[in-house]
Image (cartoon, each protein chain N blue to C red):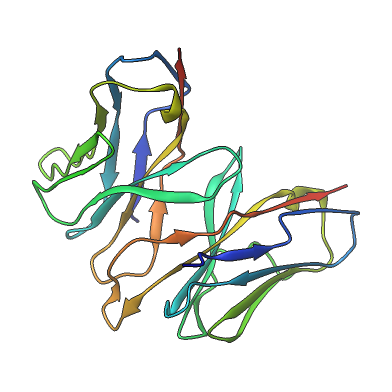
Length: 117
Length: 112
């Protein structure tokens, strides 16, 4: 079975450029999460969706960050314009969920390592 | 708000040594507790979980017991292997919630 698929695995870009990270969740999972991992701040939840609807984006650092989930099988995280402090590993995770929340574990992709020069 | 505190690393052990990684939490109600493991270059994967007080989660020789009286969920393994070298994250999720909150992670090095 395919797991969570993220692309690109590595991205090197220059400050000011637009960056788009992509995620395909596991089929049938109706909750999707974007996390950012850095040495200084650890794992931070940026945003999560339930049934393609953004539920909580309070972790999105600023207006330069945006995320969309146009359908159940695809999500994007966009940074425009990018800055060196955005350098991090960005993880997408998915999970099945019901009206009462998530019942089990998160399934993580392998991450997208972003370097902004 | 809810939070997770785990022991700082790195932890360096010799093969076959006993492992303990401490984890304590702050949460209202009865959260579910998790240990995730991250191998180099990979995403996190679930190692074990416990959903109510006194539950013991176990997997691959690792164990952790949900202790509500001490708000703890310490990870243990009786005999570590070189292949256990990884970063271990303690995590919680409130009952009926969506957010999973992670600790800072503890890096484990196991020497042959």
